[in-house]
Length: 563
Image 1: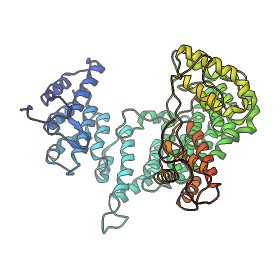
Image 2: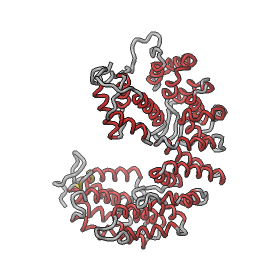
Image 3: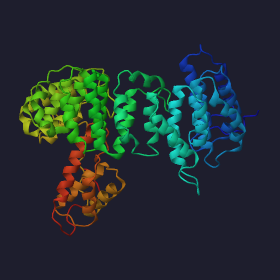
Image 4: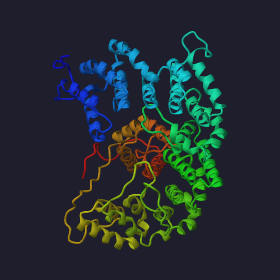
């Protein structure tokens, strides 16, 4: 066929490249290097896929893509199925079943019964939103690694379908799915029992809460844990979930309905892990507690005894997580200060996370205000940055705090810490290190000169925003409170209102009162800084709400000029 006149997605590339890439995929075999195959697949994706629509070249290539996907000798068939599903999804933007797809569907549907479970699992994307088609597949599917994602898709599809107009709730595919899930909830297959709880949640959000005893029994069983890694797939995921991932899903579902029930559940998992000697389960429970605490203030009271109870655990990873939780809890952890001090030299580490148990115990003591954290504090904080490997962490996981986040609040101890901070700054300036800005910010926060002797200029200028006008400040507060996105201007607007010295009783006060009562973190962060910024924002809101009522427009002119 003539490809010259067809539209390709990638700018500057002709559609004539498509048959060349298709041939490279067709000729690949098991000896083809993975990097070469992945590069070829990426080229094909760039040529065919444009979000929101299918190009002319994509439609023209469709029969050849299906040919390759149907051929058991094609290497990388799951990729082709994912690409076909992406094309089908985008092609359905204007018409649910364009002609080209209707013509290919009889061939594509045969992949749902392909001998390869991975192919069948990937092909579920073609029917993932159709409860009736999924039910038909359920009756024929026997492989557990396909049945799990099939069941999860059934719950979502049935919840989206709902009863047809004029029909009863007991009619149709949704009713069949409910009956199927109810039977599996009481069945003998233990992995499918857990799956059925999660699959039923879109149809009835209270299902996980009612099934808590079953979930606790199954997820706390060490013998069942390895089974999840064999069969627990989601549609569109290349690798299976492990037990920790499944627990995280359950905790998330519980949190949506009742955060305190979710905390109670992870505490019960930790207790079960202690009884059975399952350190992995204890780590998993603390990870769940951390995510709950990161997202909401309400779990704090229940997380405190959970973390404190595991501070002396025999497993390094458990102690690491427990110390991190106590640190982010701040002054709430004060009753456990002596136990934290006993862990200052604990070298225990957690896989993939930076720092030691002792590092987090030291940070926890600084948050409490305990002076036992101060000796060698600065040296320990800057030491990781002297390692040429740097620091490694995943945003959202427990990790060591940044230097400035630890030191800025310690102004009361500035004179004791100042020599070490200045020495670290001299070293960082000489090394052109990463900490120059942080250390200078610390000195400013302490009211100290951020320049070293002989310095006349800063490599990193410090910008100080001017106060907003009353109208700008109040408009910013209302906008941020309305859309739930607390941008950097929000805290600045609160400071500007506080500087003005009064606040009316109108919409701004009402919006801040509602925001202060919300059970969510007032932050844009997703790691430990979520709790620090939440504390800061809530304190600023309290200051604004404590202002007397008043009228008039005092304050600085509008705008955000920098000086």
